[in-house]
Image (cartoon, rainbow, N blue to C red; front, side):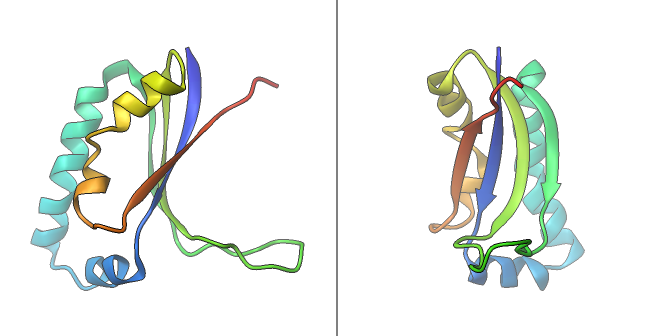
Length: 107
C-alpha cells in the first residue's frame, strides 16, 4: 500500500463561517467527518487536524493557497486514493472546497 498526504482547502468565507459557528453547529459539522473516518477503516492512517494559516519560512514569496486541514491515508495507487476521497464530507460543505493528494515517496 502507498501512503498519501491529503490537504484540505477551503474558502476564506467558509473559514469565517466556521469561526463563528456555535458548539452545536461545530458538532453537527464534524459528524460527517467522523462517519467518513469510520468508513475508511485501515485506509485512514492519521485523521489529521485543522490547520492554522501557514507561515512561510525561507524564500521570498507567500504561500499561494492555504491548507485548512490534512489527513494521511493509504491506498493501492492514486486511482484508489481518489476513489476513497470521492464523497468526502469536506467537498460537501463549500462549493469552493477542494482536496489535494500527494503520494508520499519512500525515503
